[in-house]
Length: 411
Picture 1 (spheres, helix red, strand yellow):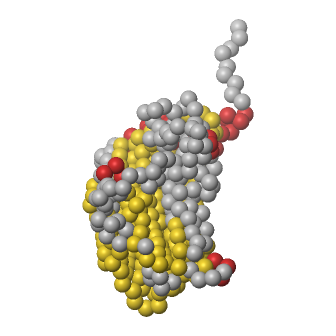
Picture 2 (tube, rainbow, N blue to C red):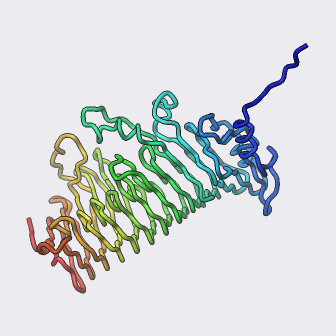
Picture 3 (cartoon, helix red, strand yellow):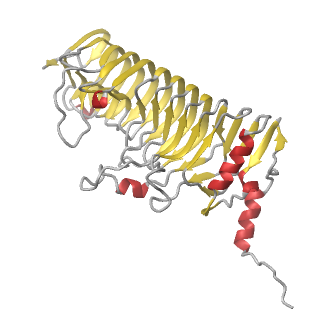
């Protein structure tokens, strides 16, 4: 009588062994007073082709429900295919998501639906979350970029997922990770409080559309430090509701620079208060220190500082644009605008890729005021002539040496 013996290929057995080597039991084991919940013990394959979404969700649920501080572990050396997933709180204790391996998004196609197209991995309503581990979050965005209306104007504009979204989280730390090739925005911080982001490497091709590095909106008390961002859009985009943001030691480029905005689109009201960008290096970006608002909006952007910045071959090193228009058709002139006030550009040096190194283009009805330039020296790349500046509807002042001389061209 033949026996029913299941023979597994050697490669499958090897992957399972590697994934679960040293793994914890499903109920968790204690390491450094923290219970560890390893996704392999919840059925993860780690081969980059089997769907490991359920294993991650179950490991998260177990860790989140632990009364002791927990570690949800993504072991190193493997690639875990993860579809759209939301990991929610509140959790009973603090949780560390330790990503040592690679989380890989499925390519664009049947794995995605209109419902899941906005987010890939989302964390919602979690207090005391830390994400670390030196691993990689890979958005697998190439096909999304090819199908973007910005890559091909004949295609309709459609939404693409944000790789990593934090919504309504408090006491959040994200550190020591690599984010690559997001479908659209790499990381979005929304409605969060007390956030520390540090030592991130964010990379996508300079031609990849809408791949902002770090997007911050409706959040307060946020720190971003010691990170390198090389993408096809804003290195950082700072939008409505941001309050008390401190950014320090950032390297940016390629990309669109560090932007406050865009603000006030579709006649909306926006408020951005107390933002400091300190010690940044920008290489080959289309913008440097930038504030952009749409016509027709309301509200204000105030108490903003850009300081200690080095620009190399940057198209618009310093720019305020209250007539921003990212539209396939011309934007209509409108009377209202988001007010821009009390902005300091200090200790900014480097080279401009365009003749106009400083552009202060403000609204006729709501002029910019309280704009200060202190110790700024921007020269034309290659030394072919002098850089210039343009001012429109702005009240400004300068101190120290400022090159180019503010508002040598007024129109």
